[in-house]
Figure 1 (cartoon, rainbow, N blue to C red):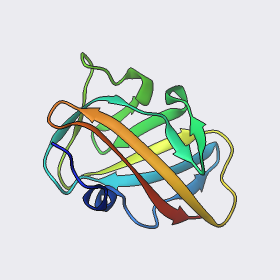
Figure 2 (figure 1 turned 90 degrees about the vertical axis):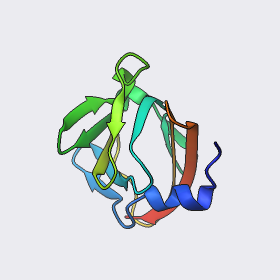
Figure 3 (figure 1 turned 180 degrees about the vertical axis):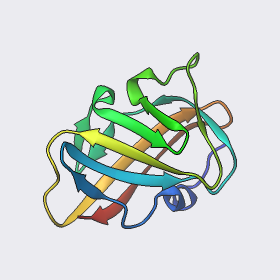
Length: 119
């Protein structure tokens, strides 16, 4: 099942892009249905790719390194729960940025989309 990008973009929590001491973070919030991530794609910002080993996924239930999400070690994406994606690296410059997000799910396969936000 292919979900239109216009619907996927609603997963992103607007104005959640923020610099952290050791990189930056943003949030997504599932408003569709519970999903099970079996792998994640590297995040891109303005065309620059950040590797999975630089990404940490945080929820109220805990956190997991993005590189550890696999078919045998899935990550539940619950409806209505904000998920913070923390990316270690240099903080982003002030201003607008285009963020690319992607992951595979058991339920609908691959999902990817880009959004614009700013620091």
